[in-house]
Length: 91
Image (cartoon, rainbow, N blue to C red):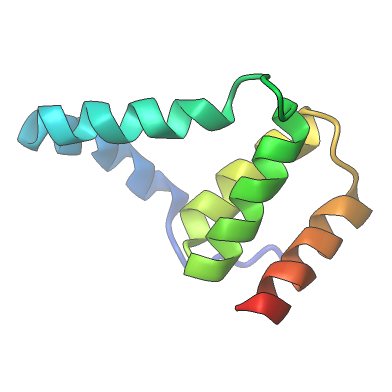
């Protein structure tokens, strides 16, 4: 358990990516930041949606980051697991 098939340390490469493609990086960051705020859809649900999309695209970095953020925003383990199964079923 707790074994990762990716290296979360790879996220350090984001600094390099920003230097290599600054315009594209900033556009991506602006879109990603939409998830991190409250709006008509509260932050907890925005993060759960992000978990569902990450599960569908199978991005381990996004799954990990948005799962932690969803928990921090008040999502329960049951909500996270349910979200993952719904996304997997629809995928």
